Length: 562
Image 1: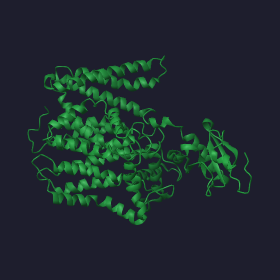
Image 2 (image 1 turned 135 degrees about the vertical axis):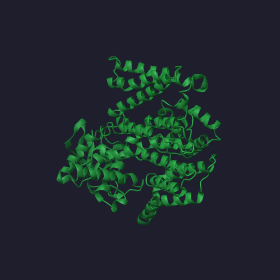
Image 3 (image 1 turned 120 degrees about the vertical axis):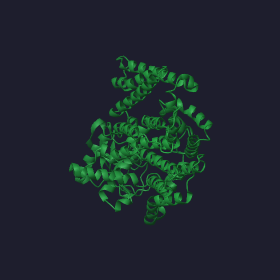
């Protein structure tokens, strides 16, 4: 077992180890951060809202806009910080006022904030299992090596920062149990973390705070929090977040409720959006896809937590896992990142099993199969690496190098974890973690980590054509359209530095008389051009076959021409 500190009253937090793992998380976060374009949807929207805040400054930027219209999808907490990074980049680079910031500037703040979950989840574990330094470090190691956590944290999205705020909230609530702690102070810290959630994705505060308070109420440890000062501090800490929402409501009236209702809880609970066909299975699939290499530990950890449900660790882990699952699984809209909060209880559950793997095999009969599975998985990855290296397969050579460290780490680590000496088993665990993280590092330095970009046409050639059209004085005021879903891509509008719209199916009274159309070809012409008898002429050619057309809709008195 992972023995407790001989002085349980004053357990020593393994700060050096947690800071070392945080450094690994930062390296993974910064590697190749700006080597790929922003993607749809969230990155394009977050970048544009942040840029408009930087342009408008404060306090005007506290009411965010998107292309000049009120932005009511998310609060501006992270957008404000990204706007600050953009402003600092402008000062340091002396860039032109209308220059777009590079991708690494837009992603820098969320990338840094998302890495904080690594030491924070270790601190949460240390509160649940006081004195067990190895368990705290193992929990942080699980978190730093999870591909979904590392990858999503690098994107200009809210989910990575949200995970760090949730971990801070739970850590503060756990600290309030300790004898001699200031419940008012810890409640205030928890409230500030809650304000962070209110300014990121406001509805997520409800299950996150409920999970923490239920865990605190059902905590089986001897220490009980002083509820009055704790709730007082919690209320004070929540004041900044609640204050912004109240002010937002005063300024924008009933439209502000769209953030909570129409585009918040109501939409995800009642509207099955694109990619949600599998319903509650989506979070489970994402867990099965992204939980490697620690996934074999998860079912065993759930069993262990149930058996230890009378301990703080078992009770809290079951409560956190249960409450978050109950909040996420019923959602009608199941986007892949909606399951992101589940990685916190996943790491808290799996962390304590890693030190158990360092025990002799006879003392861990239920875990004996795990190193065997890792060794088999490592062998498969090495075989895939050799296959990819063969010129006959047609696979990119980078794929061979990408999985090689993970394969070596899993194979060597799985074999060493079955050795009789503890020193060998410890070396095996280190090798496994190192190999996996090296593969993550290679992935992030290459062109594959933002793989959603490969699902649609690249936006930069279209954006260049749109900017060239805008540079022509006579066309500067004309709206630009594209057909199909291409006209609804926020990243395309970001790089074009003007809003590109989706061409409607039919002419409306409000349709512009003249407009620009970007297409690879308009044969056959879109329905609007056929039905309304529009006249189009080619005015520009771009890369990859893109064409710019200038179209004119005839007056009602004109006869349609085809």
